[in-house]
Length: 482
Picture 1 (spheres, rainbow, N blue to C red):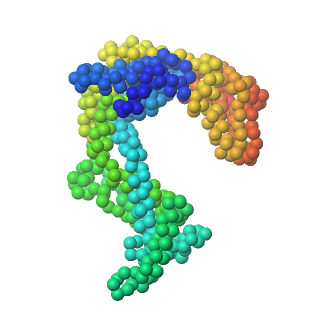
Picture 2: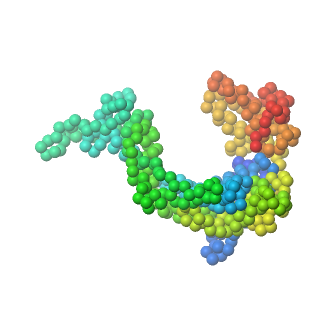
Picture 3: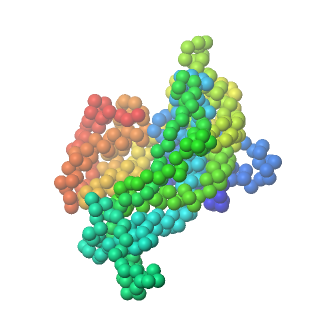
């Protein structure tokens, strides 16, 4: 972890989680301590640090109470590689589903993408300047300048077939091969005007014909058992070994200048980055800071039968055990140890108990936290307090149509009451019920928003009753979301 993590004390982590998640203080405290322990382990000597293993956490609670959101926000706070997987997607040794070890390969891929994105930001300005230079070179080559004038469109007669082509200026050359001073000055002025227009983004929609890297690569897939799993093999390395890597191939493409900027920026950033260093840092962060969230772990609990699907479920548990307790997994970037990866598991456990997991796996999740069902008061807070509250999202969406949207306290209370009653009378799906209630309430207003430009809409108790009335918990009119 970087110095950034030094300031992430358990109290600060909890405060940050409070900005997005209502309630569930026990779960927040547990994950905050687990995250802080990652940083504490980094401060120890290498010999002792190797023996300090993460305290994996089992989150127990009904759907829609914040289990997944806690894990996702925790990874964002830590700037750590994170993957969310569903236990039901796996089967014993991968015969009918994904191999359990593939979650580690996904984690490493996420780590590489995370580190690369961070490194790209560090070379942002250099890459942007190099990309602009290549666009300029496509518009005006080294021998002259493109015919360019300060016309209203930003372009002159240099357009041919809708494509901006670089032309050599029609200038006279002296006996010495040098341009006369007057013509040289005019050419430089024209080149400078072109640079200024590019820098000011005045001609972004104009087309340009430019050479870019050919990203089409021959594919090589090595499948696992039953053809359901792509193994972690670096196909790019094999292609280079066989001498058919397209890494140096280019092709001519017709793009707008804006499109060319983005494409060339990525190419130039790749040139500035040390790919080997990125991979090494990504492997280190995956092994020491990685977080794997295993959802629906209760779905792989055996019912006690001696054959049938129960055998496969217990097999998945045993395969998962080997990854959680620590093993080496082969990925396209090399072997990765899982000893210090933090595992968060979650399940509703409606029909089973955590004690029904195989004993060895239970022991690998020493911290267990029960999340509470949400109350009507919690629903009111969820609608108004989090930074990403649904009401704030709708206000922003309506604002794009220049329509003002305002939620009153009694309107929020009524929406919360309808959602809470719907959960009680049908199936409890937690905060997800609010999505259905709000969408139903604002459905017609969203449809009419384009015709209401300049208006201000107040969502109060009266409007909610008009839109939903007493049908708020009618299962036929408001289908719940899972």
